[in-house]
Image (cartoon, rainbow, N blue to C red; front, side, top):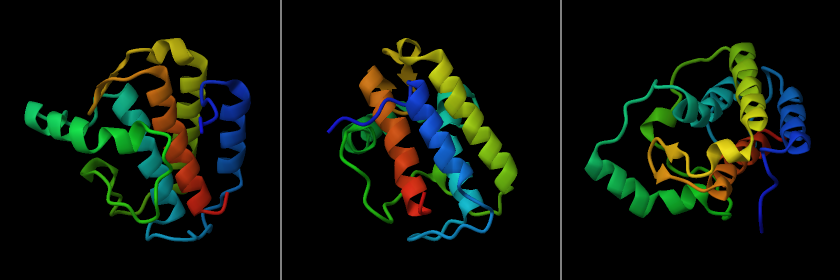
Length: 152
């Protein structure tokens, strides 16, 4: 089943509405992250796409990621609860809810405004070039998983 396109304004707006239902006190239905940590965690996907903030994996690690992780991240198979995550995505310190929320909304808006053509064959930090569908699956599936985790 195909995911809705995060590149379309109605879908991006719907995801943002879901984010806006969260408060700094929203509790998870599963997992250990606070809502602010979850927002920071979701921001990492966009940091990897737009910023040179995280170290790139070496050739061997990139091969391992392509072989063992890529399909789980870019496929249409939903994530299960409490799956392991890459080190860059681990949130072990407190985060500012309003800052992380604003950052995530801005990233979603930027992605929608750039549009899917910007992502056709675009290089992923960890997986090499991805298709529009793979980028969409990665972005939308991750957001939907964590918004659902927090009841939104």
